[in-house]
Length: 345
Image (cartoon, rainbow, N blue to C red; front, side, top):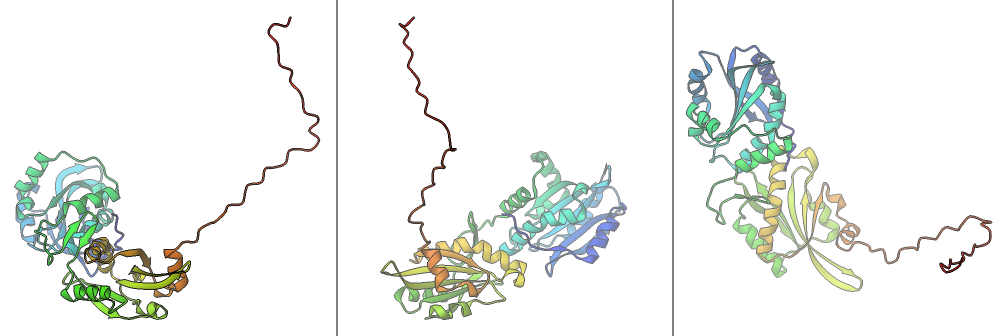
């Protein structure tokens, strides 16, 4: 998955990138702060690149905090010096941090200048950040074939998979996205919904806890459903749509994912998008049979006509026959072809 996070380099970092091309800067530490790529630290060239490596890079790595580090090598390229891009995403970092850094890496390369980056290293442990770790990486892995931006982001996300034991209280990554645990109140609300105590539930993701909470549980008539959708935050909704179709009375669970465009932060958009599929699996495990899944920008879309059309698309009962075109007028009399007789002379 290729996320368009919208994160760009701030003005300060852009200036540092410009100065870096003169060859005097050895290392640039880049962090994501306030949804911007920011310069956290720089260090000038002291000695050769190998002797500077551990001395200058070592103090810049924080155990639980991801970052990017651009390290100037001594190899020359037509544009100047080649640079090593180190993506530091420790195993102990949160899923949210890993996703944001993985999805913003391509933007960082573009902002700095892809042509300057001659080598890349992805590190998840402190051992991999050392000079010996870098040399080991060089020995074990041949240079990869050039990747598209989409392939790079997918590869980065795969590298940052969480290595953890899975239980009902731990969030984890799956092939379908990121699975966040449900609060006890959320589970209880779903059970009450199935018992008929409610016909509408609204869920929110706590970005701090990385846990799904129920934020509203009520009996809501369809006419009031649009008012339940926030205009400034993403939400999941579960609605029991009671209706008739072709003379039959039906009750259908409709799952609604509302995302009010760019009114939400990058982090919020990514979390809700990634958690949706695993959350649907969790609802199914609790006994909720979702008939229809919808994605909307605004609650105004939730009309009875809209839900009817989504659940029961109109069928074309008959297709008008394609009229055979008439032939040209005055074609003349039909010709008769006499069969040939091989025995005739």
